[in-house]
Image (cartoon, rainbow, N blue to C red; front, side):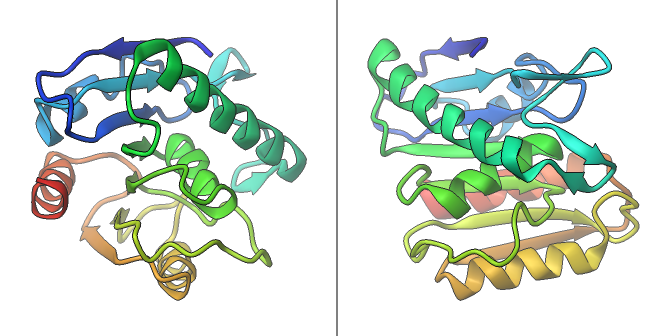
Length: 202
């Protein structure tokens, strides 16, 4: 998978794995990583799927309707890529914290749903429920930050609340940060994620 790896100054700190939103690239979230954990190494990944020329991490059938078969395939592909990247770049595969926005948050959520130990924690900005009716692994050691907009037309509040419940029921310590905003990522939401990260991992 096309990606950027930046070596951080603190090799013991979690490696931040960045997943952009629809139409983004591996460059998009680098400023977020700098805000959240400036001393961490960063692995920023570009989605392997194109929708009308826009990179994504998996296909969808329509707005808000995921292609479940493709989601499962791409989640497995991504999990295997993280294994390879850890070897290639020499970082600890078990010390990864995801930062994802929109479609990128959904693929990170899918990793949490399907692969125990894939992530040590996650900051998910405006995620949806990746899959319903599946048994989640034990997430009691995986703290999760959910950023949500009260007026988000793509990811309505009840979607966030459902995801929070599913993750909490799997044992995850979940914090939800609400913004009086839509689907866009605001400075105050990023600031809240950074504060949560420092409290949780530093």
